[in-house]
Image (cartoon, rainbow, N blue to C red; front, side, top):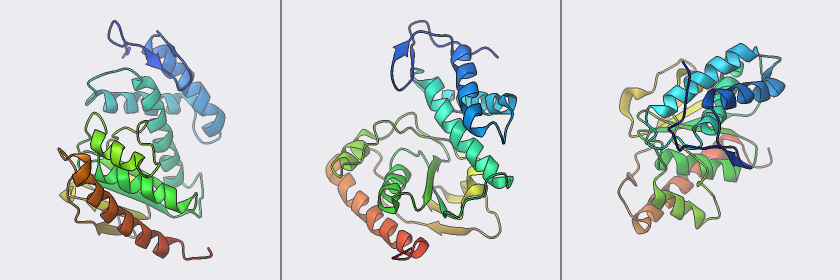
Length: 225
């Protein structure tokens, strides 16, 4: 299926913007990812995952600007999870997956806070059982107060491979949407939902999450490790 952006759309990479056919950009993205993942996956497989990622994100996107870039980032995460699940990549780092409904607030804050505090000692992902089209702006503002930039983040769909690759799966109000696999640790954090709230009401949710994240990190990576 040929993927064409809307007539006036422009697809931007992180450095520059130029009008282009989405399929051409996705071809380039597949070749770029093949430079780092080519020993594990063929370029054809990489392109298939990119195409699927594009379609998953397009299903909820209101604006298709940057969509090929976001699809490439999402695909790279998925391919690394698949590689781990296949045993092609071995990592000693614990991996945590945060899941909420829209991946626009709680799970994004938790992922950013754990990534910040862990400083490379934990692999962190987040996803949504029914992802929104954008991150909650009040959440972006609240995290910016801590110096954590969520402006380049985006809601991502929950995938089976992400769950399988995780050592700890933390759900936040998404019920039974997350598949259960033996040998994994599942936690449910009962948190207030920041959806529709202003930054004043998001701050205490952020602090609650931060407290929980610090406790989790202390369990996963003991002091001195």
